Image (tube, rainbow, N blue to C red):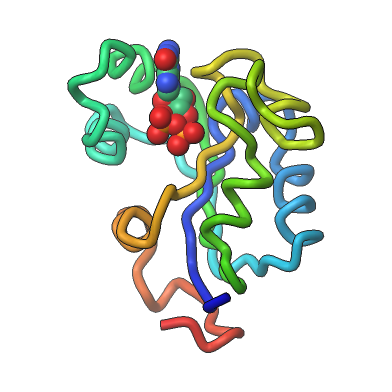
Length: 145
Ligand code: GDP
């Protein structure tokens, strides 16, 4: 596996449920390191830009509404195979279909209010990391570029 960086977000429902620590704990327990993190209340424009790939989907307006409804906790994680590792820990988009022991299975209340986001591939991870963090804001412990 190669050393990767990926972007994860504890979404407004996860922050509201006081799950920031639990989500970070699960990532750290899986061997991932936090390279950067901050609280952020997304503007409508920021949420629309972040989810631009979904703008033609019927749930886009609702998703933007949800993501701007309260503060988020955005973080960059790094580690071997970080992108897939975060996806595995999150579970399927729809909590009803998520595997036991995943974050979404344990805490999500619907397909939209599903507590956590994680980049779905290397190109997305690069775009999403750069969307919220400048390079100088990220710790470089594992040598990731
Ligand atoms: P993810 O990569 O598992 O987060 O899923 P997607 O990239 O497909 O969708 C992005 C986000 O849009 C999801 O995490 C949900 O918050 C939301 N979403 C996805 N599918 C649906 C849907 O069918 N209905 C609604 N209301 N929201 C959805």
